[in-house]
Length: 99
Image (cartoon, rainbow, N blue to C red; front, side):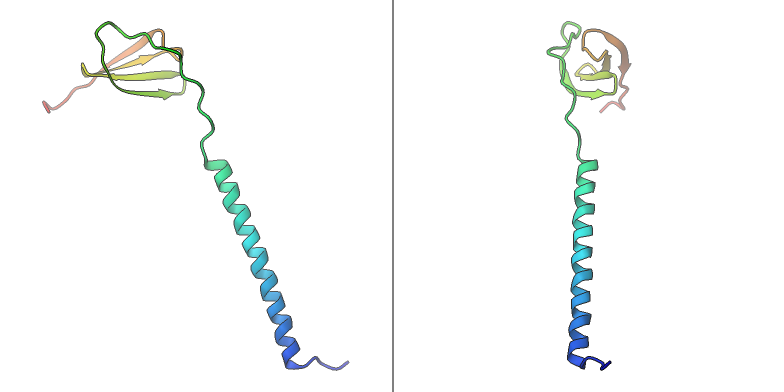
């Protein structure tokens, strides 16, 4: 068999380089989509319609954790509530440096 001319060998090499580039691009896109799929947050569970706080309490911040709700008040304490927001289960006093 005759060996193909040099120009044809160059085209064959270029063809394989393009195939490898396309396969790499497809693998990269699949990896990016998989990362987005696994890393993006899922919809949060719904918040309770209301929460029961002691009278005169003003809320400065609110957060939800696994199995609890936390409210930071202007009185310098954190109130931990049950997931339904109906009962205070713990009070944490915030100690400041006089700021």
